[in-house]
Image (tube, rainbow, N blue to C red):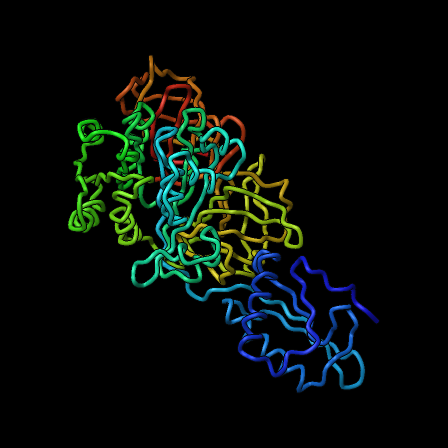
Amino acid sequence: MKLPRENEEGKVEYKLILSGVTPERLQELASQMKYRLEEGYGEAFYVIGVSNEGEIIGLSKSELEESIATLDMIAKLVNAKIVYRRDVEVRKDKYVAELLVRRYKENLPVEVNVAVMGHVNAGKSTVTGALVLGRLDDGNGGLRTAIARHLHEVLSGRTSSITLRLIGFDDSGKIVNWQLKDPLDEAETTIKSTKIVRLIDLGGHERYLRTTLKGLLGYEVNYVMLVVGADDGLSIMGKEHLALASILKFPIFVVITKVDKYPEDRIKGIVNDIKNVLKIPGINRLALEVEDEDDVVNSILAIKTKRVVPIFRISNVSGKGLDLLIKLLNLLPPEAKNLDEKETPLVYIDEAYNVTGVGTVVLGSVVRGKLRSNESVLIGPNKLGEFKEVKIKSIQVNKVFVDSVLAGNIATFAIQGIEKESLRKGMVMVKGIPKVVRRFKARVFILHHPTTIREGYVATLHSYTIRQAVKFERIQSGFLRTGDTSEIVLHFLYRPEYLEKGQIFVFREGRTRGVGIVLEPIG
């Protein structure tokens, strides 16, 4: 009896025996386990009592227990644990053990989600790169290319997708990423940090507005960082992002980049432009220019009021002002979420994948409640408004396995009982008896519309990860123009969705922008 020869790639590792291991050898085996875990998306499969050639030799009970105890020590060095064990007697008094090792963290670090917004070419990806990688830009977009997700983003310099990047802080406020072999390693950053700031880098070009809205509404955002380039100043798109974040009542801070290239008069002009937009009725906020550490502390106290907008001046080339921005990110308080574990769980799904060896996996934001591994939930609705029961096999946060997640977490769930092809963005995972909505009553505010909105008007609605066309079925005031507020009835055109009273949404069509709140689901 023989197993296939051990492959140097993949998540399976054979070990004949692990006894009398020196501290140096222990470290080597830990590095090997880390590689296997990375190959297996956080899991590795160890077979003890088998040679590298796959020959099943077997160990005595005492040898087996010593080997497994050593493997447990190795696992702890890389923040993993043995989660499954099966012993097989291969001949009299000779045993082989099959073990599943999983990268694991008992308690997740404090998490803060920051949406990075701003006009195309403002420097969003570059400042994200400077913060995460811990190095300055070469002035030619070197940092941007280092963190871009797609080739066309490298070539064009435009972010078209949502890029999530983690900055980890230790107890002393130092950035953990800078000490890692790979600063972009989410699992290592999570494991070694006591606080995580997740930068959600959104597209700045108008054609990617739907991507920007999805990121702003679908990722449990706590703060908005508006990036303004000193070359272009506060553009029309930048003003729109500032207005939208203000109307949605997000705490905001502004980062003016490329200040090394332009004189002080130009920078002051941009600051004045920002102040003028903040004075607009409906936004009505105050600016606080950050020049030293005392201003950073004042910013922390003021930003949570949602009335004050701190303004930073930085250069990703010279490094000016980056230290103050880093201090702010380290001190940003997490949002006070309702962490009542008894609340009905709700997760909005953003992405669905089919992972080899795992099956169907979904990425989603936990809106409320607590979800655990090995429990059953409902997922839907489909086109008919139906939900299907599935089982959560495992949960990962930042590529680290956890037993459970709470409100505010962005997590991936391996689920059993449904195919990836049956899933879509905007679906939810819930418990209980969920009710779906085709029509609902809402109150809306028109940010901008070039003419007049009348009954029968169609726009695209965004709420969490929902994106669907809606029809203005009834407008209480008869019609709507820029700046108007009214109670209306909206009708989803293609399929029912899961919506709740009090839910915030944004709608758009061409140059039209508006925000609203669900008053009452009609059915």
